[in-house]
Image 1: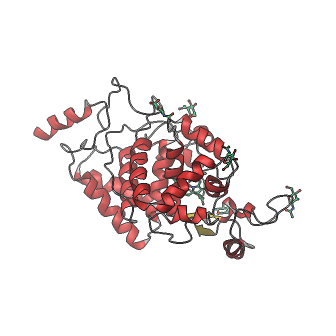
Image 2: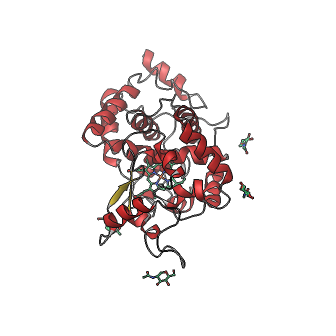
Image 3: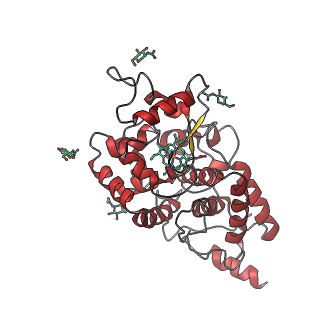
Length: 315
Ligand code: HEM
Ligand SMILES: *[C@@H]1O[C@H](CO)[C@@H](O)[C@H](O)[C@H]1NC(C)=O
Ligand SMILES: *[C@@H]1O[C@H](CO)[C@@H](O)[C@H](O)[C@H]1NC(C)=O
Ligand SMILES: *[C@@H]1O[C@H](CO)[C@@H](O)[C@H](O)[C@H]1NC(C)=O
Ligand SMILES: *[C@@H]1O[C@H](CO)[C@@H](O)[C@H](O)[C@H]1NC(C)=O
Ligand SMILES: *[C@@H]1O[C@H](CO)[C@@H](O)[C@H](O)[C@H]1NC(C)=O
């Protein structure tokens, strides 16, 4: 009875809060952390995959869990996710753990936010106060996933515009969140255009370090495009600031990564890359803040929630 009353109190709140499940499921964070930790012991990369799922959820109709929905309009079928987004079975396992402990309480959108947080933290990254209380959406948006998610082939200006479209309006947001690429992998298909016949005058991308280019050429040669390379060649599974140090040494993997440092008109982003490559503390602090901001992208308003936004009870 007491717990039912506390749950209603939580439901009536309009804003995301750090203690949303304190009354109904105080162990929610620990349960997510335990599962993510167990999975990452077997496969460290999964921390990265879970971080990316939360990003891909938030950029399409807000952080509403819609990336998880199946069906003909599934976001899983959109180009940025197909044969690419991973970790769905881990989210299912976490959901099953939570249903055992607190049936019908924790939303899938919140599971994605928590799993991303622990994926980062258990990779050695910063902790941050993840905000909770999201409502799950009931419709997926495949065309929204195709249009809203940034591509590694597009210019930085256009990527910044996509962030602005969801209310992430600063250069800092784009650069610091790109630092998520300090962990995880990317398939050859997404960077091999930098390795040969890159332009009329140059076979290899001139902003790609020659020795990294040659090792990537051997990796990708003759394959079907599905071989993977570390986004941070220096420390693939460690959440640190090597991603930014790599960019300063022309060792970014994706064209969109290297463009933050080397792109034409990249002055503002370049200055931030230099700042983060010099200070892991500053990167960690700004990354945590930007993750909270990204996690607050709402289906109704682009970012943040109006006071009238009511969170319905969980089914
Ligand atoms: C700035 C624009 C971005 C672009 C163009 C981009 C693009 C990509 C691409 C092409 C991949 C590889 C996919 C594959 O191999 O199938 C990837 C992986 C990844 N992205 Fe991004 N991304 C961006 C921003 C972000 C953000 C904001 C985050 C999170 C904060 C993020 C987190 C990740 C992670 C962790 C991986 C590795 C996933 C794994 O190993 O399973 N990315 N991204
Ligand atoms: C899908 O996403 C696009 C781009 O954000 C948006 O304009 C559109 O309204 C969304 N459609 C649905 C059905 O949510
Ligand atoms: C970003 O948007 C918020 C809310 O719309 C606004 O208060 C802030 O000034 C904007 N920041 C920049 C750098 O445009
Ligand atoms: C190299 O790129 C040019 C221009 O994009 C294209 O016309 C040509 O067919 C490409 N060559 C190879 C071998 O891919
Ligand atoms: C990669 O793997 C997927 C799934 O097995 C397959 O459908 C696809 O044809 C492969 N090749 C590329 C270039 O994606
Ligand atoms: C970038 O900085 C250089 C000098 O460092 C300047 O000449 C150039 O105009 C700047 N570009 C932009 C787009 O601000």
